[in-house]
Image (tube, rainbow, N blue to C red; front, side, top):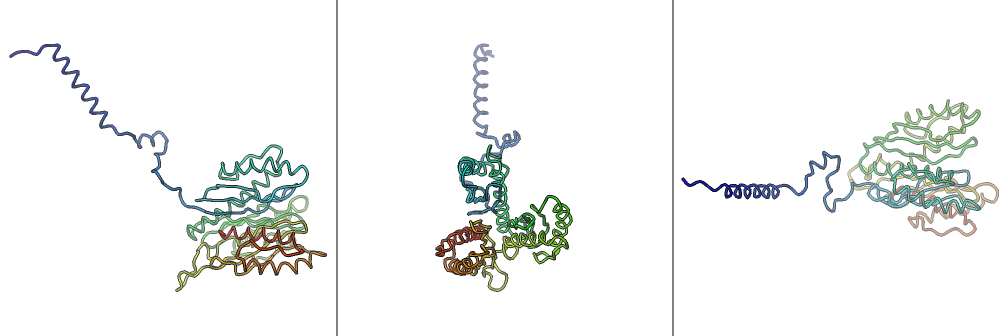
Length: 351
């Protein structure tokens, strides 16, 4: 038998090796999702995949009072994410104008970037920053509540009531609602300093327990804490107003099946030159069926202006179905505050 030449065998072996390598490379997948996950990286999302659903529309936080004026934040949400933040109220006048103009845009950007109220204070604007963060958290609480309502009544919602001013200091209540019931109540603000510390420490836990037990703001005042109790009940009612009617259901039960629920929504307090204005509306079928001012300027000349203008503003709100209503002649400040608080209530209804 004729033997192959050694050089020829070497050439054939080399060619076979190269062919095998090329074949293996052609079979290797272009990407390896498993290895990416093992390295701690998420696999690439499919093209066109939308983010998970969430709250859409405008949400206005409660006005936060600071040493230099009120701060109030309004968020624009899309699919549960902050797409825009703006201060609808901020300190003004004198030096405050410069501080507001410099700090608020930076706070707005920070809110969008962080998607939370955990943002840094702007240097030189400590009070404005603190107020901004507080109102921002309030807006996020409202958005969270609205998102929980959209997912079903079984989800827990956190709702922060409006600040109730009392003779001894502000009171503000935050509640957790699940299955249409209050499961937790807490005072995020309460009178403090001197004798108030003792009264707050004694009364607030009892008020918290009463709120959970009754599931409403119809609770008894604590003896010796009349003002704190009154403020607590007022802020608690405001928080309850923000909870969607029917424990988060958007439709009423019954043979109608599609009958819209009635909701009562209380807007944030709008501070005016002559006193606070706050509007409460009743909404059914996406329309305002009733509007009322639960706070309005009072005392002296204000009593006459309020009694003449508020009924007309209430009628205008129901007729227009929105906050685009005309100011009442001779009640410019009251009208402006009314419209601002009305818009805040409509924001809570998704309008």
